[in-house]
Image 1 (cartoon, helix red, strand yellow):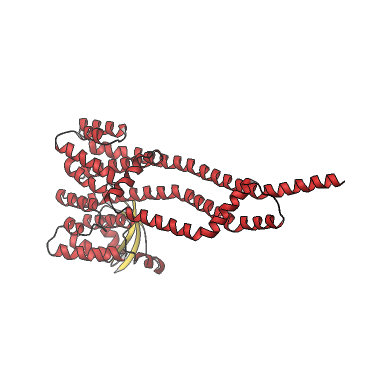
Image 2 (cartoon, rainbow, N blue to C red; image 1 turned 90 degrees about the vertical axis):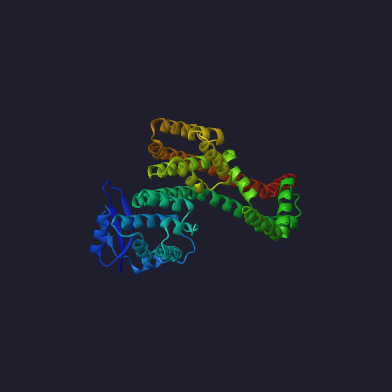
Length: 409
């Protein structure tokens, strides 16, 4: 068996990329063609690339899960049985964690388990939403199409995460720079100047003395302050695992003015995409809502959504339940209302999700635009204060010398 890297397009022109194991390039092309994909380029990866395939990481990345969905769909579409497709996937260039999990899934399949049940045993690798979608695909007999839509979902999730990380990267670097400058000035620079001023018997202004005392404090107790900060951060991190504290943190994410807009935009975008995906894959409204509960990574919003599900079970429309229980965008409510009247909630949600993607990206850009100048301003003010504190005694000394020189003349 040989490993290949390929690029292919479907009948709609959508491009997919991936790795595939087959006896020959011809066999791989035929398999992809049966699945409805036309190979545009193919090559064997280098040894360096192969080493990256066999990652020993203990985690399965979203991008890897998306790639698995694409390739698994191709094999199912080509007429390969689920068990054989899983066995072939084990030979692909996935991480060690995913491979070991697929082996366990294969063993369960060979004892008669459903694929969704076998995957549900490994929620850290196959999220509950993923196994729910596989169950829907198995029930509706369209597993290959469902896997493609799930791959699209995870690809969008990965792009959203990259945008968030990219937007926050520069502000974080600026904060680290600000802290670094202050530490260097307080611990190394200020004491040198103060020592020189003391030997020259210069009377120092109040600002200079205040900075000097702060510098002394950091030099004498800096390690204790650092230890306290590390302990505080560690405690806050551990407290996140307590349900009540986690819910409080999650509530802040969607209620504080600075974070509310971006987090609610991201939540709404995911909501639209997931609901549209589930309904278009053949799930009824209640099954879709139950599956969507597993995609909400926010305890506070999850509790609100539980009430939405209960309201819908009692006979309330989804739009009315969302309006009553959650503080979501009025546009979302309007779109769902239109979808309920026309019977096309799935299509409207899929068409609406790019709008909220754009809203989330705009919110990220806005926050970045605000935060960066604010941090730069703080950095400038801090340096200016230190500059004045250091050079005001020097200016006083020069003025004194000029005055003395003028009198003696």
